[in-house]
Length: 403
Image (cartoon, rainbow, N blue to C red; front, side, top):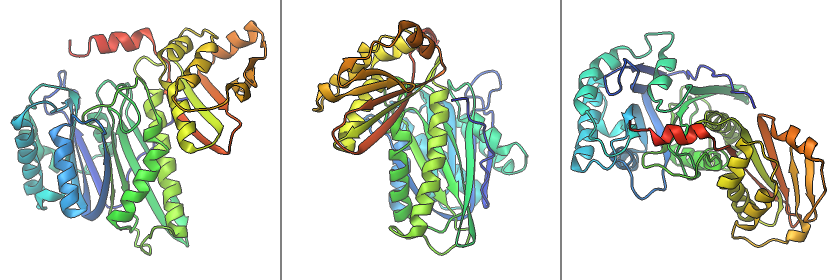
């Protein structure tokens, strides 16, 4: 898969801005602000890591209090994680400043950070830059690009997308920006995602839709098997579309979920395509599963196997590593029924090798996009996990991350 083209994520009723506040060196953008012009229903999913940044704690509490959000402020270059009592005090001061500048309640301001763990957040730089950031909202044709670039860390490119659909003659728009390149693993990763829609939908239904969409997208990607301390994906819905309220279980909900899932998948794919040092885009599909859980466990086992990922980087057609990872998944299956295909080339049939020629295998392994299909032949359920290879550059990037 080639890098998906970034689309302007602008949604009616939302504004964005991004600038350099001095957290990073060399005048690199590191502070972003996105706002809704009107009160917006909100929902979010957060990291499953038990060590979380104060930003995650703050935003969880704010969401629980109001179920709504008007502004999201995000910094990169510093995770504000494992920073003691100062971390939460900084979140309080920054959100208070943003609220005052915008004239909105502090509880309707979310905050997120990404970058190095264990370094105190230079909050004074963010506080000083906030008035300028607010003044820039929506003033530039590149405002959404500025915002998406300002949340990047080791990302090589910014990531954004936008889709729209019509339901009963009413057009609904969804847009989003994400960051993520390494420390990527299901149940959120070192990624931040911010999604916006003009749909009329309440926060409870919005949370259900986001959870379902994330389960088929952001929670189905892995680069290196590590969950981060700061991860979140938030969605805001401002109702500007003036559609009939979307309710769970209705045709309107199913159409909204379909569009949201597509948007999330596109953004998640961009993260994998930008994996640190990655040279391969890999889709691991397990089909014929008895349950979705069984299919997921096996797909995830293959996608996270260091031996599989290094073989992919080396273009080594060592398919035995794939079957070994299937067996390591910790879920029962019959090895004598399993088929394994590599880019539609049958490697294993009913648990036995097909003796596909070495030359053909080597040709397949040189392709940028690799599809690994595992058929268990014991049911109708399926799951997919997106991943990439593990290269020399990944080790170099992370060995020198703080230096």
